[in-house]
Length: 151
Image (spheres, one colour):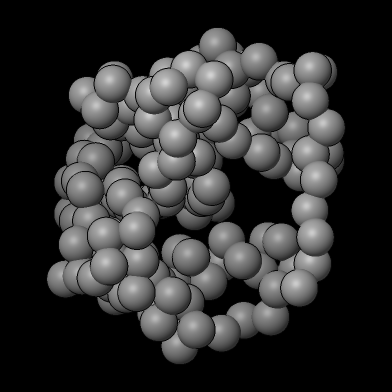
């Protein structure tokens, strides 16, 4: 790792750094470029407190990546859980510990809030993310099927 990585809990004042990252994240998943939509969505999450976003910055305060988590609950464990929904690192900062630093901060949040676990999903072909998650102890769920209903 050649850069000093700082992880902060983002606020509305960080929108201009997060929104371009979020827009790139969505483009990775084949969504059209739409910076205004990204700004609007992230602003709403932060203003309403419906998400926690951690932002990674280098020593010059340049944004390197982010992760976005949503709190949920597990009726079986009778505890909160965190859904790690988004993780994105700019291409120039990949393989330098940024993703791991963001994941470590998410884990700290989960522990601080007494959560039972962190759940996440990734695309079948996203082998880089899968390798990161597995290196941190995450295990692929072979017990449950995931279902969705498009509206």
